[in-house]
Length: 568
Image (cartoon, rainbow, N blue to C red):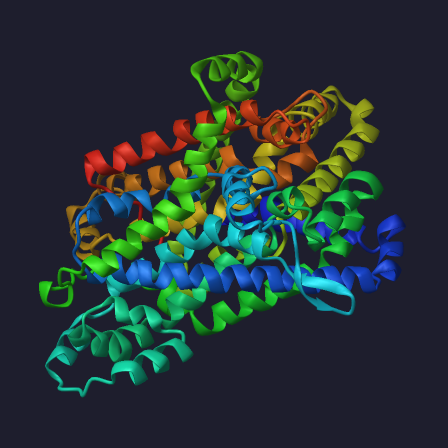
């Protein structure tokens, strides 16, 4: 328990507290007076962008999850593994793919211009307020395509755990069909997707299932909102006036701590969203220990309409941009050329991702075990603390880590001459952490520790109390009982945490752009920099190589082993 508390304090709380102290002095303190009208307008644009992406993502995720759990159609097993593919692809790579379709030189743009004389500007904004546009449909669509599987994953987990009996009973309650009036009513209340399902099934979904899913829908909306609001690459690629662009420029050119001041409006928005989820949904979502309940065949009828929608959602949001990248990359010579140029960055990225995944998984294991032994309220508080970095965009997390370890390195450098041990420690912090790969590990811990912790907690919740009681009766030592009973059952949770952390570390960009040492680079940074040099074919080929290296092994494993990763 002490080790878990120290780990959370060192990796999560200390950098945040250090950034808060830096924001109150020097150039950062003067930045408070410069929170002008432009920043407020950009904060409003970011809020509209995140809300629009959230609503659009929910419009895809809710009917998709219902189709996945309440319908039978060809390929449903494949789709259960395939729909997480967008989560394995970094958002900026998806944006690059969409630029090949709806960008200035995109295929759809060229077709519309040639056929109808219509020019499609993916960067254009609408809904002018005070002389400035506040709604950017291009960026909103790309953010929704990148993050809607998050909401679908959470809602699908909720559908697996709710009691299906009320929904099954609703099948036998007679109800007069409402026809066109019912369709209009459903559209007005945002439940148009119910018409993807048979008439006999709609009553159960509307009256029994959807109310029980409200907490999961809220949690899914929260995660989409914070990921969309804190995403820097997509607004940067589309020149969208998001506050994240100002935060990044401030962190890079002005003063690192001043970026935290600029990000305050965004932080307040995400903190408010986090509080809402914690108050109204945490008990039913994050602390839900109910086991999955198989849905009876009566509430899972054969439904080709719902299946067609589910397949269309995945193929449009993930398949189209990937196909555009493959087409743009061209022949094998492009792949060979780009591989020779970036093989060192690729090797370094996979090395960092492996080390980061292992560090994050071990941290999640320590915190998960400690939280499970505490009282329920204290354990949840410890786990919830790992969610705090979600209130800060990845760029600000990078700033916090950079400032924290810079101060530690400077403090140790001042006292390094007092002993050889202090000198060795100062050298390790300076070159191993602050100017080495350790700075990436610190960012990965802050950003992704909560995912590994949740995987371990989920695995622990599946252990039957009778097994623990039987172990007590055996008279063996606590250590022997742990390795014989607990360890084998939490191993899948640990491995799931490692896989999730590995994928997220491999795709991380926002914090890496801030903390990268002068002689370090990752493949994501290389891709982001190559875009500005108009090397479209090489960028597309590198994106295809990276996506294939991540997505294909995971999908093949899930399909071959018929396993899934349970995070909730």
